[in-house]
Figure 1 (tube, rainbow, N blue to C red):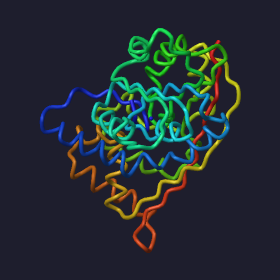
Figure 2: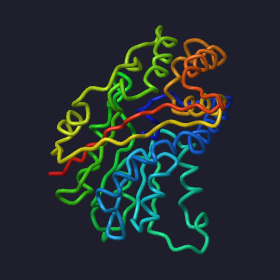
Figure 3: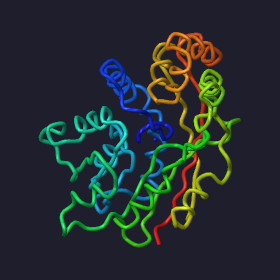
Figure 4: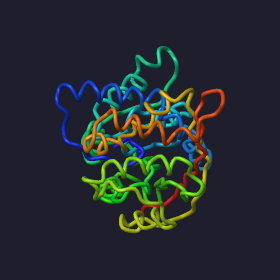
Length: 288
């Protein structure tokens, strides 16, 4: 995914960092978020998302996954409580004026938690029949913290047996970006704790599902290569994930930019593009 590649809990930004946050949110929406499109498509195809679908997106961020579901005819609700800048971009994408005269599904965006989505719903609103948590876990220690509580809060809003989709990074040997993410851990060493890099474990998703009282019911793997037009595009895209924020706090932006660029060089092609093959895993679990 909060809508970053991993769950982030950062302090409120001051005026200067707020400008940076808005810029990073735009970089996420315009550069990085699209890298997970193959994952969204695979999940929606497998679960036959369409007009009968009522989807609750946890940590919806700037809303690309919601937009793709809505384009299939699904009614979508997105909740996000950590990144208002990205939620503002989701509103630009998904609210009626963004669609013009085109037909669209019902869309609701909630700055808050699943409970807030329930409070905002009409008393006669049907239960959700699909819940998604598309933020991949498994590349930072502690990156699943809070996810279980979020899922537990969402479960009462869903019909019995509703599929809940969880996502994680694949094995490091199949994720070229893993070597680049280690830069964040190295630079943030004075602050390392829950933000330390660690390889994805085989049962990460199952453990989260079981803690939330969900029943695993199938899984899949999807290739999601990270491809960038040039080195600057790659650096901006990866910085927008929030994975390097602790490193910036521990050192400075120039140092992080320098070392991130160096780590990306092995993945730069002769034409200047940057290409990193990755595999992500998804789990489909069912509500009780």
